[in-house]
Length: 428
Image (cartoon, rainbow, N blue to C red; front, top):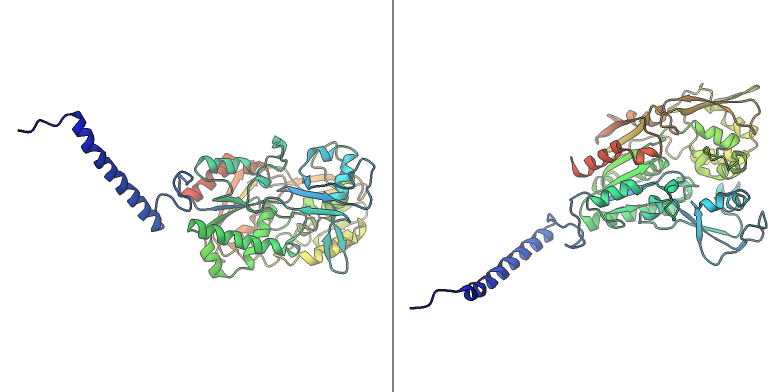
């Protein structure tokens, strides 16, 4: 009669059984992944995603991503300015370059030079500017590479999604661009943007969610208006729009007239005005007549009133004729305001005093008296609500969500915004 099985024999029997179970589990996981509906999409286990959220692409707004420069200039505006550099350095945002005197160097490097013949812009002689990190999140998480809090931008949103299982530069990526220019001068960007969206779709097997802020929404609207509907149906799941200036921004007239230091006391508004004027995107964001009454007075002086029908005279009176040419070249870019052709979520701030019109005692070189209306502090409410006009104009949903008391930049950190984004991505 055989002796009963002892502990050693039970262990020998258990090992093959455990190995068989492990093999079956691995086969099951591989079959699920191969079928495209498994637990790990796009990335293998170990480096994979914990939650089945769709791929996300972030598009920043004006001033919303880093810029780098390399110099080999024939001359400089001040003896403290670098004339030549051996490598690229951070031009935006670098707080050290905004110090008194040094800011003259920065303005001379970041400004654009307008060519009236070609109606395009270029850098000053000897300045080469590039946009770092296309396809990555770092240039728009922190505008200042030192990661100072003053330059925090998309970081909170990105980190929230990373904590939920997303991976930077994998299933959440960024699409930075040269925000000084309007879409008509950034054609290569849109080719790269389309390719990036298609790559993310192919890698993760589902359409991409676009999240844009401020002027980035205008860029995305322009981009989508140039894509066929079947492409949008295949590659774009949702478009989350944060603080979009669909109808332009009243504050733009003040920026062009007398400059705007954004309440940074060490920077002179008049000093920075030249750089702000040279950015074609500034002129692109003037108020549009599809949102604003043609009779609304945006700027008044002791001798003149300026409505949106008076832009040409406005440019003449502020001594910036190139601005009118810039406006002529860019006004039609999204003028039709055709719906995007994808499901869009329009999130907008309210209840914050927002510049609405201006009165100048001494025009245009003195600070104006500012009159306020509703909005997010930058984008006027009526401009943000332009999105509402798309309801019923497209098959896809148009959803509006108010963010009470939310300022233009702060909406990126607003718990209501974060919660809404999570709901779109995860369904709860």
